[in-house]
Amino acid sequence: MQDPSPQTFLNPLPGVVWLLLIPLIGIEAVLLLGENGLLAGISATAAGWRLEVLARAGFAAELQHWMWETGRSPARVLLRYLSYPFIHAGPLHAGFVAVLLAALGKSVAGGMRPWPMLALIVVSVLAGALAFGAFAAREAWLLGAYPAIFGLIGAFTWQGWAVARDRAAQIRAFGLIATLLLARLGFGLMIESGGLWIADLAGFAAGFAVTPILMPGGAARALATLRRR
Image (cartoon, rainbow, N blue to C red; front, side, top):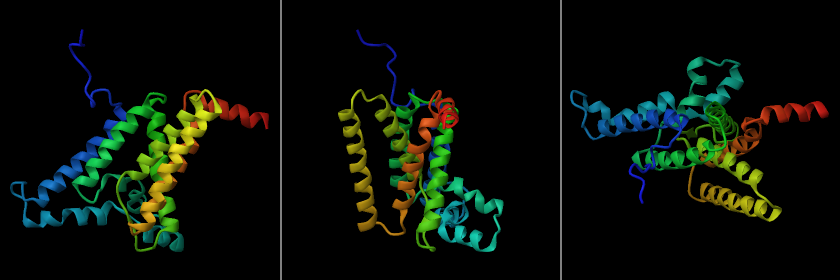
């Protein structure tokens, strides 16, 4: 007998994922409507909103170099380290990101509480921007939530490794993720420009590194390990 109220793909999503998806989808919807002249009472300048939003909220490697060189760190610049994941190149970019964020967020949330999961995403986003600012070309721009997605992949990798019952299963899990990361690196080097892959790999590394601490009981285990040393 079938369940009279089956769950949909969206219903079980944790609140933290919705906290990211709602502004991401909302911003993209407004930009898309504006670009197509579907917002009543809005002038033709709406066609250039995406570039304006990128200029105001995207992250440029040049800004990080400027802060290093001048010793200044204005709040409006620091905010870009957290705002860039909500800006995308177009509806296809945003839609693909939203699907991945929902799927991976749902998977990772099964073994992590809401606030630690939010911390995981924030750390991955920050790590992505910091690495991008340090190693990408100074004129390059970073936008989109892929560093957060790769942070979730890092967390999912650690969770899979931790619950694996034998070494062979652990090796298979790492092999799958290694293939994904190598494919991402190859795609970035051959096709993309601007070094976006730098932010993605940094997001993965950050997500993988902090997950053991953010998992239930992880902080206590980390403190106990430090005390033993």
